Image (cartoon, rainbow over all chains, first blue to last red; front, side, top):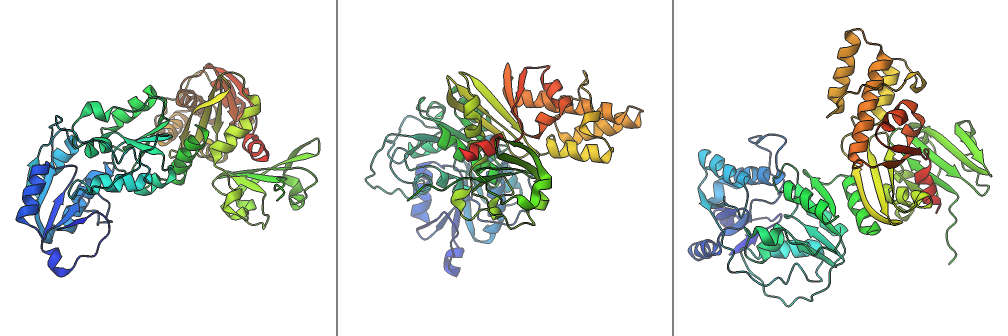
Length: 253
Length: 237
């Protein structure tokens, strides 16, 4: 089994067996599909692979959900299925995308993963890994969990939110940045845990990020005001001014 | 190693570049006609950024959208908000906020108890800032001195809609300077809301010289204009 997270050249054989997913499908379903299709390549459809814009969604719309639709077309010929979270573990846009893709003839399995009873220990979000690597490891662990001892460090800064479409903004932060919000919930194996999603260390200067046009911007803006953090939303890739704003926040706080 | 001397600094905005030169540096000698003042041997220049691009002057330190090709080393570039913050420090009392209204963006920095507290940078919407006003004044052949505070304001959610209001009202017979004044009043109100409705505001940037804007902003809070060279002062240290 292979997990495709970033640009990756597949062999012809591999192209015949792709399992697409977004968000965090239920682990037991992932396990079943891994067993049934041991050679499948897993593609996280949330990620920006530079797929052609099929112009199915409005121009002003969440870039992550646009990625889902456009990536589905990119891998259409090779898809075994799409595991499509539609519950509180993802968002309404995920639910709508699932219906749109079904209507367009894609093999879609809607999933709900709202169990928050069994939570895993947080080790990556609070580690000394570079921030981008933290995000990459957390999302990669959805399909293939890696167990590595990670050094824990106290936070100098926080980053709250989903994995951004433009992952390069994470490189602006020092390694002593802890991860909060939905990404932390994913690490905990509880993507629908709203209490954990709203948790931050209140004295840690935190950047509250949301993808533009995402309903999570409601939480991001509210929490940024509540905890005196910095609210930012980015549509596709970050502008120089947005980068400078983050840099200024990190240097001045 | 001795510390680098910072004598000539640049704040290169989208349309206007602000330059401060001190300690007898004469890099700006060919541009003396752009000097706007000289105080205690320190020279202050304002020239169109398009003009500056044609020169081969290398500045000791710089900030702003247009400055990257005018420094020797990336290390000589400073983030605009940092330059603004550093320039503002000497004006800071206990709780103070500075708002910099530029050609295409606006940013504010808040100090509480004399320490940095918060910032925001409206970096994407250019419609309601300096460049739009300059274009309007050129289009209607007016000068900012022609504009007087107007108690009415356009509610401007987007600069393009604001332009539409101006054109509609002028078509109905309103004087262009009155319509633009209402537009500026709308921008001033937006700026105050963007800065989270402070009671007192230090103002930086080209709008300091626009009396209509300053008077409009004063309807909402106390305003202390600090001029156009605050970011340069932040670069000088």
